[in-house]
Amino acid sequence: MATPVIALLHQANSDLRAALARCQARKDGPVVIGLRDLLPELARATDELRTVSPESLRDPELRAAMFEYRDHMQELAQLLPKVLGQLLTEKARLEDARSRAAAAAAWAGTNKNIL
Image (cartoon, rainbow, N blue to C red; front, side, top):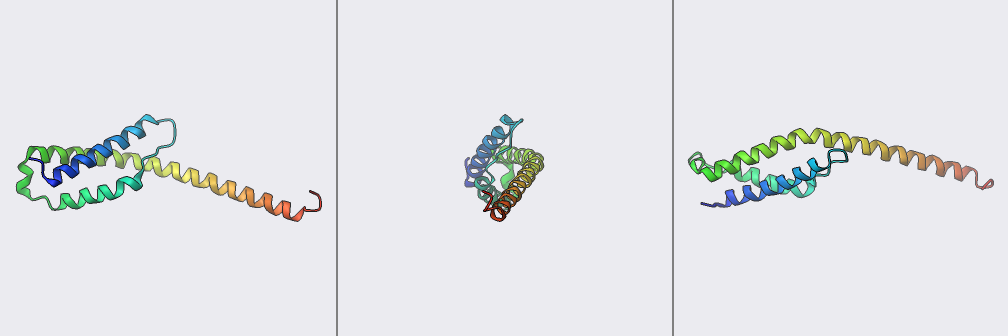
């Protein structure tokens, strides 16, 4: 019996599975998850899970969807530190490039007559 909660979990699981597969396919490159797209859906799924009654847990389809969702969340939790590390590395690279550009602009401004 497909309830709205089950349908939402199936959709969230499908999207998470696809996002995690994209990340695993890029082991040597930067990890791109698309969290902006996933976060609202994950928040909805989490809110819906809070409304699940203990009696409805007898439904095997709901339990299977919940276990799959939990597994995806655990995999995502293991991946997020790597994503954070890559974002911090990229931030440092961009800050370095910005400071080099500012230094070059300052040098060019003080040496207008030479150029």
